Image (cartoon, rainbow, N blue to C red):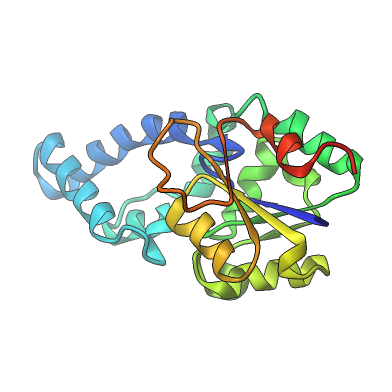
Length: 214
């Protein structure tokens, strides 16, 4: 293998603390704007998110802010609360080992271009040779286009690349459909249905998957 590709959210970091911080702000603004209770505002907002699950728009918080005409921008929330981005403890040691071992490293994300800002604020951006977002190719996972463009930028073939992600439908299915090796990181112990080539619980297990030192 020559290249290791990573998903972002749920794989190398979590934005859940940030989401839990700003969602109450969303509900408060929406309730005042529409003259409804915060519970009703919550139901309306979450209904829109669930109704668009796995679509192109679903991956962009700003789409939902604009949909409800809220004066919020996700980039500004990231810059205001960078400490709410939590990098998993196995991420940096794994990335350093992979880089020192000589692998090319990339990110494939269905999120918009602010994902690069997220990586920068989390201190992870410089570990990667390429970061490809949906905005670079007008496509989201599991569409082949976003995977193929990423490995083209890295100068490797599908059979020389590994995709590591937490989503069976996006990361695993998408990678396997173009001939890449798919590694499912299952941090929560969910049912995997034997879709992935490899299943790991922590990124440390990538050493075993890749066969130790090159």
